[in-house]
Length: 288
Ligand SMILES: NC(=O)c1ccc[n+]([C@@H]2O[C@H](COP(=O)([O-])OP(=O)(O)OC[C@H]3O[C@@H](n4cnc5c(N)ncnc54)[C@H](OP(=O)(O)O)[C@@H]3O)[C@@H](O)[C@H]2O)c1
Image (tube, rainbow, N blue to C red; front, side):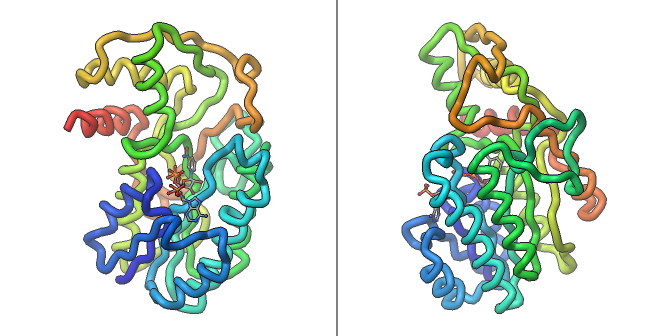
């Protein structure tokens, strides 16, 4: 197997480099080597590399900044995945792509399934939905994994922000009326590798996030509790629960980010561990 990995320096990309390394030849590219905003570069690179699988971990992920530069977000998240899918079809390659809970408006009261209508609230979610649709339209072999609240030890994420703020402040204000599942990059990357190693791979859109659910406030509390158990912090800051209205951001977020992953479990016989297990294991990694 020859795998082309995009976004190799992102938080998920770095874990994928580790998880995919044993599957065959891995060509991992960062933005300097393969710019998804440049369609010509993208066509040429895929044709030159001739992968049997493309794993697209590159994305424009600055959710609030996307409100000010929607065209760039759309080029990277909306147009480039379609180009990768077209090139994958030419080569008979499989494309694995990641999408987001932010394609939903969050108004549903139960977890979202793949059959639920996407209705993004903001530019980032619209650009990611455009990418999903472009892949489906290209009619290549593909898997789209919609995931949520991604974190790891690399890159920027809520876990790292909380640990930093906890060192700087005695009190924090964290949103308690948005619900979802924090998903560890290692679990996503390992699941991707397990699937790629299979002889028979289904096609289509799947929800793939950690089991269980919490709010950002519950997640923040768990971060400090588990970080103290792991010996990473000494003091626990006081964490005040606030509402989304108390903390307005340029891009509104869905109140309900919960993803129903039963289709993935049924078709692959796999499920990601509970979000808190991922958090504990990720923090254990931080000790070394
Ligand atoms: N983070 C989340 O909470 C979350 C939630 C749901 C779904 N997702 C999805 O999960 C996937 C992985 O996200 P992540 O959290 O790993 O994101 P990330 O840490 O921001 O990584 C994204 C990577 O894409 C690269 N990139 C940006 N623009 C590019 C371009 N024009 N050409 C090539 N590469 C470019 C970035 O490069 P630079 O380092 O040079 O900027 C970075 O390495 C994405 O599809 C994202 O939409 C993420």
